[in-house]
Image (cartoon, rainbow, N blue to C red; front, side, top):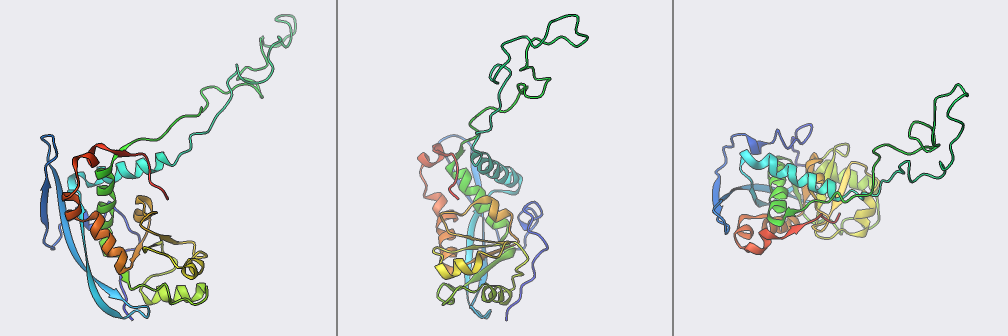
Length: 273
């Protein structure tokens, strides 16, 4: 059985992405229509492939583009803030003193009562009155360039390369839903069920989904639901060989160089999840 040592918590800011790495770094440059130059760092890493029993059965590589260290934090921060703001519904609403019910009549005379003068029941100073500077429905969404969003995801994945575990497809290994068998398989892969983990696979079998849904620290994602927050919030990233091929195809340097200028101009308001 293969075992892996992992940090107590996956921190993007303490990642090896921002420290000197002995691995060879290949730099590629892409020149957009303007005069600015966006530098892309590429780090190819070889990862072992584990079987369902935890034995090494092969190797694969993960070759992702990432932002340079001086701009990586800003790129990832902008990506995560965009996702969080676009997830807000913006439906919070309160009533001002002009919108609450009542208040058309002066509650009591101005003088000879011994009380403070009051002209309306809807004053914000009294219970049941209006709200001062309360929230109103608004649109919180912001736009981000498609290339920038993809670069943020690939940079986050590159920062977590030391916590990636590649497991061969195990969709047919669960004839019936069984959570205990799924946790045993996680331990064979060197994953603590109490740690936060994210599984990425092209398709999730029904029995796999049912076997893992009771594990509160586990997130089961597909390429459609892959998002920046779950990547940064996980201690372990579990991939299948098909998921590795998908990441290399969508977030590799070759795919970046083949994009058009129209992609840089388009913005996406949010990511489905």
